[in-house]
Length: 314
Image 1: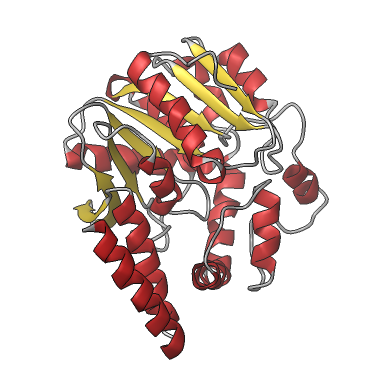
Image 2 (image 1 turned 135 degrees about the vertical axis):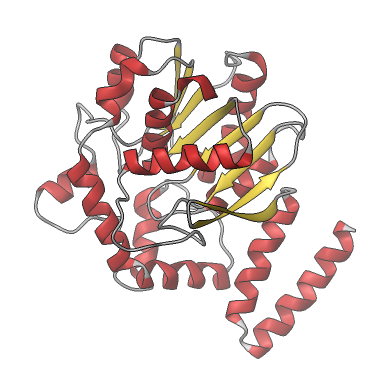
């Protein structure tokens, strides 16, 4: 089945290239990535919002994964591929991002999103699960764990937002100087700058997918700017709630993260009252689950299945 799909996909790529069907190509490329990770695309309506999400079935532990600012559910697609098959994975597009509803006039702060995410889990019938989040999604996941402790079996944070870093990051320094946030993309060429800013080793993207993501980032620039302003005005909400987290917590950080400095881990160590383990990854940027999905999945796998980390890991 998979070999036939690969052959058909290669033929489709050739045909699409000849015909210039960029839109069809990116959809097929993303669909193939999801297929290789055994992820199904689904949707559900929760309080008048249409949520799009991807899910991999499993009869063991459930892992809810939450993307960061400007991201979407497919930030976890390659990561999911490396998890054991019995782990159920659910990756939603948060409201305002990806294919989920984007109504104007509502709050898109991390706390507001955490409350919406809880309604989403209720609608899916999720009672107890592990939750992981990256960047903004990490801030949302941490707030979720603090506000709804009975649902969270463990909390996994990848370079999370919501906490003031003792050492300013490169992005903070840029923004404090009055310049525009490095997370906003001006044009297609500027997308390469964003990739280099976010990753030490940017993941490989076929040219048609790279073009699609660049064009989408430019098109969403003003919308993302409005959401970013709300998040900045919200302040460091997670930091004020760290002592309310009851679930054990795993923190994974890229040492070369330019967006949020890894010194946030020291704040977590001081203020989280429950069991906490940390991993600082050398030569890694802001989104380890994208930059090294295999290693990230192994760390999460050990944590979920064994309740601790394999000490032979970095």
